[in-house]
Image (tube, rainbow, N blue to C red; front, side):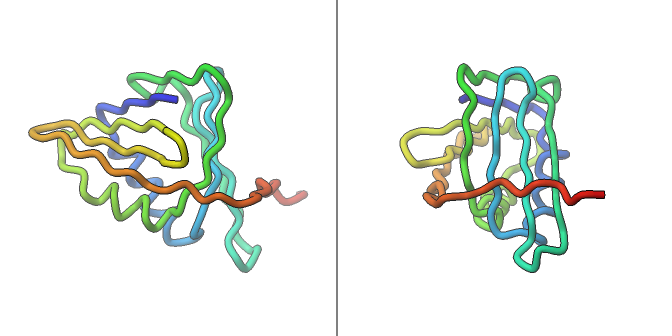
Amino acid sequence: MKLELCNPGIFKDAFDGISHIVDEVELQFQQETGMKLCALDKSHITFIELEFKTSLFDEFECETPEKVIIDTIKFMSILKRMNTGDILKLSTDEGNFIITFEGDARRTYKLRLIDAEYESPQPPAV
């Protein structure tokens, strides 16, 4: 999986809000649909569903569907290090979510994936 965003402001803003509600999320990546997350807060009151279509990304490569579980607070602390004008690149390797900022300098961070049985929450019945 390899993603690139030249204007990552909306992405950062979305995760800033999410990180105040939930501690961890499962991100699902699929070439046809893009990136999706579903999360339920610990008190099971707030359900979050967010989709970023592939068209939002400047580059979106995902040969096979992939799921990763990340700590939203740690992810947001990394995103806050992004400078205006940086390009955001996301990828994975064995057990890590790799976040790279490219601008005046290149900075790469590895966020350890949460290794747990995670059952994606379903939207509440209406």
